[in-house]
Length: 433
Ligand code: GDP
Ligand code: IMO
Ligand code: MG
Image (cartoon, rainbow, N blue to C red; front, side):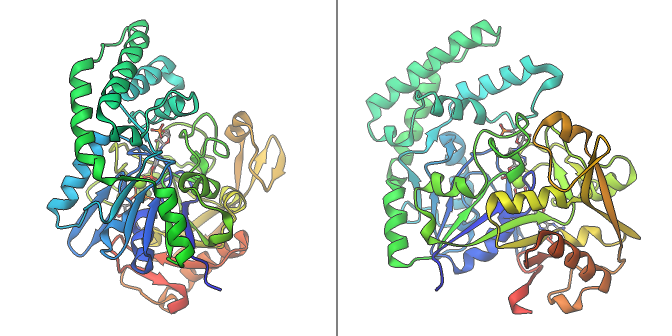
């Protein structure tokens, strides 16, 4: 039986190439739904000669037959959402309310959340998390603190204006204590009321919509943002985001049950990157890191889509990838950016850690231990051929195939897709080999 829901998640620290993988799978989806995070996400999709940078919209928006959902698990900055809708519209993408649906239960990010994010990072000094400063943490804090404002409140403009006004006033008390500049209550209220007028047609009960579509047998693709190792429960807390990017988050963040779930794709780069602070056992410095990162000339070089920050780079970490497979119940791996590894004589993959002289096959769950974890590497021969034109697994260099095979063996998972370049078609789809 073909299960109607597919989940696609980041198996590392985000930026694994989820957007391009979703774009591919969305060709056969009826609905593509984001279930968590906000505009801290940056998903780059390259189609033909156009590069799309999506932050709040599901990457399925580039496939005209797919309806797109912003689920209840998301935190939405309405002003930035309107900008994104306008940009996509200008590029000829249909972003009408017939296609795009925002959950009444998604929470709203205000300038107060952004100001509090900045203030909190400043106060942490050299212990800062390195957030994207988009107000994500403070917005989820208001959600769990039961004082958040939800998209559904936009449907009653007067009450909405009052709620925004109150929330900015409350934030100003906190900002005053932090010696931070105060926010203009009236200006923000007007801006948000204006945004509400425009967004109202998009706001619906997406939980009801999704369940109805699932019952009809529609194929729903759940698009993860961030990555498993940034999960507030399962990531390297506190160096995490404030949501659950892992599989469980998809069910909560959209409101349907596990009986519909079939495939769970875990997207991983062929190496590792991380933006922001926190442990990264296989991190490299110097020539190899610079080589993986690229110079920044190409849009796919390792500089954040949202913040432009250089990403930390390192060898592939199979200890964490196996952990990620457990947390998410992955059914297969999607391996991206294999082309970037062309040109190395040798490649390392971490297969275990040495923590204070003890070999560990599973990541330690405390930060100090994870910081002391020294990777134990298996070294594999590299390849020098340009693989960006390869479309069939069999046409890959032998050493590239061996590299992929080792990943698959160590994780005990099949590989379903391999990308060898950023463009939509630069992809090897395994069951089509
Ligand atoms: P996401 O947040 O997981 O969607 O990933 P991002 O879009 O933030 O980062 C991935 C970057 O790598 C983007 O610039 C993609 O265009 C690019 N990319 C994705 N797959 C490949 C690939 O196979 N090869 C190369 N060179 N670039 C890729
Ligand atoms: P996509 O969807 C990479 C990281 C930030 C920081 C931590 C907390 O493009 O993969 P936040 O602003 O969420 O409070 O920051 O999480 N982070 C990401 N890193 N890709 C992302 O999204 C990220 N979203 C958040 O860098 O370390
Ligand atoms: Mg990204």
